[in-house]
Length: 386
Image (tube, rainbow, N blue to C red; front, top):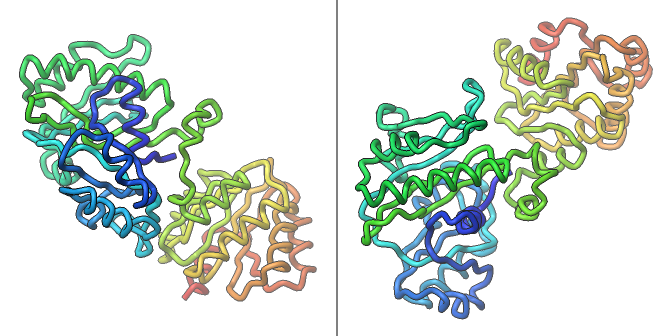
């Protein structure tokens, strides 16, 4: 689950991580009352969406008057912001962060991610923060300094000092950085985060470190024990089909292809998408119906796939173990009867109750192509999708 910048900065303040003073507005009518809380005569207004590249898309502006802020807020609230990280529709803007403008001496980068290969979290820092950090990582990886954190022993001062040296900080800034380093790791652990980025971490005109931006991704599997974080969820920023799938405990991720996939098990789903690709096609989605589905959830999964107008064929690949193939077949029949389908549906069912499922499909009078071999099923899906 992603958080907005203002939510990330709220958590930073909670953990005594230095950031800018800010207010959040959702209407141009309340701009003046809120903005007057900030003791400055220059502000930065930032449209709040779950996507990077806001500045280049006009979603971040330095403003010199309350009237300019009101105009910015009035323009963006209710509109969609399109950046290089969104689709052509963009993300809806419902809130604007307004903060005190900061004079920047130097932009740095600081982030924490989970590194499964080392079974630890890794803190990364670079002296080259800012909008082009991705290019730095690709073209000058030696400018990215990393330290793994032993979650049993906890963060070590020497790790913080190593990163501070890479950032070329002064002695006074080193002590500030050590505090940020420790507190950010504590935040990461306490809130079950999957990623946190501060880009840029800046040195301001008083030569102090400050978090000018914040990106946080929370491990969705841990939300059951992070109720305060769960309240921050902004479903307007989520892909509609993915949101609908989550309501039925389905694992769905929209992709760019035209062959819809319904599979049970994440590994089999990945393998199915690979076979589609190697057969010359492109999957339209990742959809794992899991092991505890019923015919209603399978029916909803089918409807979700069909709601993607790019889908020209559907490949269903079910290996019956915990999941019974006849339950899946009943769900497919129910969905087709309710929604209707005018595109090819290729079904490959193997395992638990697959013979019973085959009879259900054959006697349903539905236009479904059955194929027992997965490679042949994938080739058929690619052929018919064209």
